[in-house]
Length: 177
Length: 72
Image 1 (cartoon, each protein chain N blue to C red):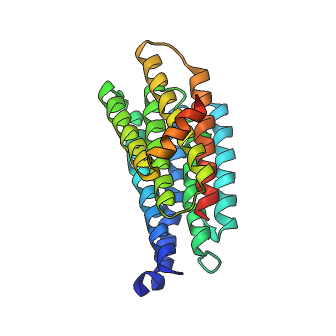
Image 2 (tube, helix red, strand yellow; image 1 turned 45 degrees about the vertical axis):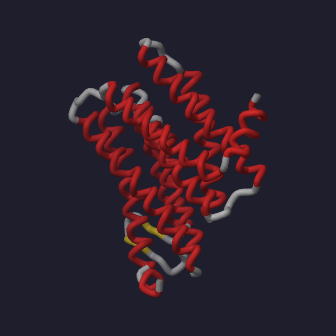
């Protein structure tokens, strides 16, 4: 335990790398389909990432500053990572990749919420609400999958799923602090 | 930092790093022009199902029942 406390700087550095990786992912995806719309999305995301990183003691250009990064803030930085890919809308050109990426993100989000649940972070009311959102998210992913299988576009399903994921991520951020 | 905070922090870091790799791999595959197959979608579905089952188990059947009833 003492070792962990002594090495919290390294832990924060790893999180910095995760944020950097997320930005790299966004850049790589935008490079696949270089359109003005994507460029704008990347610019928006990069500003958000830099602002979040700076607000919580990290500077992506100049390295890691850990002086002001407490444990709650570190959790916050990590959880903000989950905001990046869905907000990019980067897989729009590849519906199957978009679905698989969404499945990965949803699964990781639910796993993180389960960690927070086991840490006693949620009230009884929140547990019920989150369970509703999680089951709805799973149902929407299945619907999305069925639509892809039938060759149908499903913008309404995707929008509804994004809304559910946003709610879950909001809980992650709030309770991860 | 107390022990509980450290455990929670490490767990969240693990989840965050855990999702980064498959997403990066997916990007590389799309970039290489590789098709995303039905098997990828099925594997993703299984992962989602496992995560939801993990949540349900942790939250307990009473809450799940109440959520189902509330949703109607």
